[in-house]
Image (cartoon, rainbow, N blue to C red):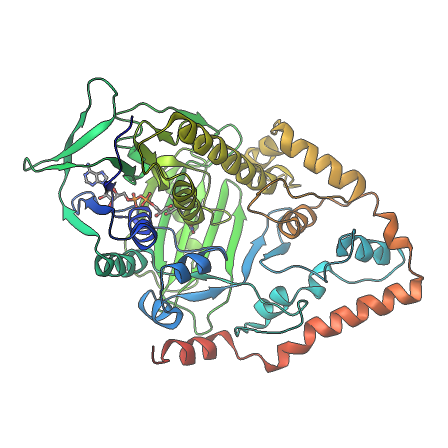
Length: 498
Ligand SMILES: Cc1cc2nc3c(=O)[nH]c(=O)nc-3n(C[C@H](O)[C@H](O)[C@H](O)COP(=O)(O)OP(=O)(O)OC[C@H]3O[C@@H](n4cnc5c(N)ncnc54)[C@H](O)[C@@H]3O)c2cc1C
């Protein structure tokens, strides 16, 4: 279809809608009109408060000032996630955004650490990770060290509603038009099947050349209108319900998310400046709504601040995320799990992918096919990483964990686990969002002990190996004393003039 793209219509004003509108406007500029339609009567999903480090690039491309952003969204710093009770009850491990040790030529640091373990050095991999050390000490500052071994990669926790509002202000300043109204009909071209317009309840008609479907789980255009299909992954990721509730903040603000497993799922705790975000994620086959709500409320350790928000979802992905002239972004494109906070990132990467393949001279089948190929790979890689947390467990307290342990996982994941178990080796697949350091932490944390390490690690005497590890550990610990507490950082940073 060779219609020049002059106008893009974004359907939906949740996090997906406003990120899409802001990023497209920022990068495409005035030649392309962008109109966003949203309905206050429907509202947004109201969750999505934890992020991963690439969001900093998004904010920076959008020109958002970091201290203003943190102040306006009541944001805090996230250095990683603490997984509690995941392998067995009573144990925890950390998935930090940093990496343990330092990069070594041809052989990952953990092989050296593994050899040292076999020689009797009793340290944890996380002793060599500044992100973990700072997180546990409740400290943070932006580090601009010339030494690549000293880095503190971070992301944010924020209030999802305030973030969408903040992005709306930024988008409108850039020239995005916002229309309030409930879409009642969708008009398609008879020949091509392309969407021509959406018609609001009051009869107003919004036409466009390209449509970004950010309408949430309902997939108003991509599914209800175009029937793009859905790959259901609930046999691998059976959690299908969540209940979210805010609670009073704690005196000390942790710079990390807590993910606490329970018999039928898990619970998140996200520290913000003005409150904690909490939620329980569970499988409705294994838990009733009342059981999940009771569990959530019982495990809160501060006063409840609002009514619970009950959410149903299905894990999986939209089979064609780009169909005709509609691109599904956000929850309309699929949903994996909140477990590793990947959804907001998937919004960002979908728009970046669209920009790389932007059909300015009209939608071409090859661009659509390439977009769908790349997004399928991206979703599948993240899917595997999330399944890993559930599948490799030693819990015996419920059918939920036993069923997940015994299920057949995707071949791609099975191979990765077998390779690591036998050799300690890990390889990043193409553009996998998660680096080797992420896979390593979760593999070890969930209890996979590699049976071997790389022979390059044998090329040092025991004394030299221990000395090297001691030096790295000391270097990683050295900045800690100078770091302010996370709360002191927020207090001074958020009041900085812009
Ligand atoms: C339990 C849970 C926890 C999560 N936690 C995280 C997390 O920690 N980190 C993370 O990255 N992600 C998380 N996510 C995902 C995150 O919440 C979403 O990716 C994000 O909020 C984007 O949602 P959305 O904008 O696609 O949909 P929504 O927020 O549902 O927005 C849909 C929009 O479409 C509009 N709309 C729908 N129908 C119509 C209509 N007929 N007419 C007009 N407008 C319409 C609505 O008004 C609304 O503006 C979580 C999700 C769930 C379910």
